[in-house]
Length: 143
Image 1 (cartoon, rainbow, N blue to C red):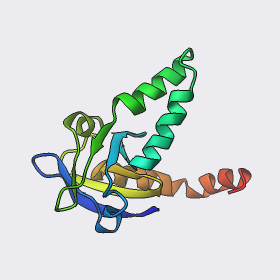
Image 2 (cartoon, helix red, strand yellow):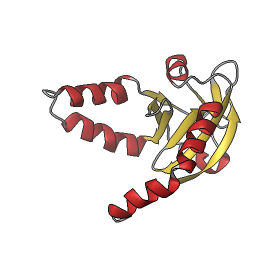
Image 3 (cartoon, helix red, strand yellow):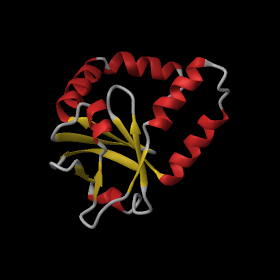
Image 4 (tube, rainbow, N blue to C red):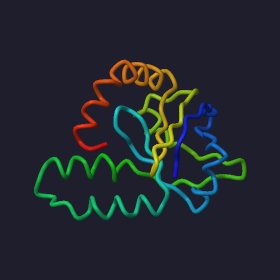
């Protein structure tokens, strides 16, 4: 389970340290892909396989299904942690997420989200201002 918020840097080669407490979970490899709100998702191989199977089962005759599958699958890249616990974030994914140097890594149960640190701070501040409204809607869903 991934939880928590961490601050790291991306080096000149595009490598980012995975928080130490998550390295064991990702030691068998991981998949990084485009996320939502201009962040990146990192999944364990097992969780990625489960998601990819669901996407493959969608009817490709519907344009939204094709678009979502393309977003998630075509943008995906296998990654492995190196001896220092870093993963390489491909340049095209860093460009998508507007990641230059400083990142925020958010643990969200079954995945990590990697954000440009400034974008994360803006998103978080905006969401925190709406937290009561969001909680109300979540309550209506039984959360």
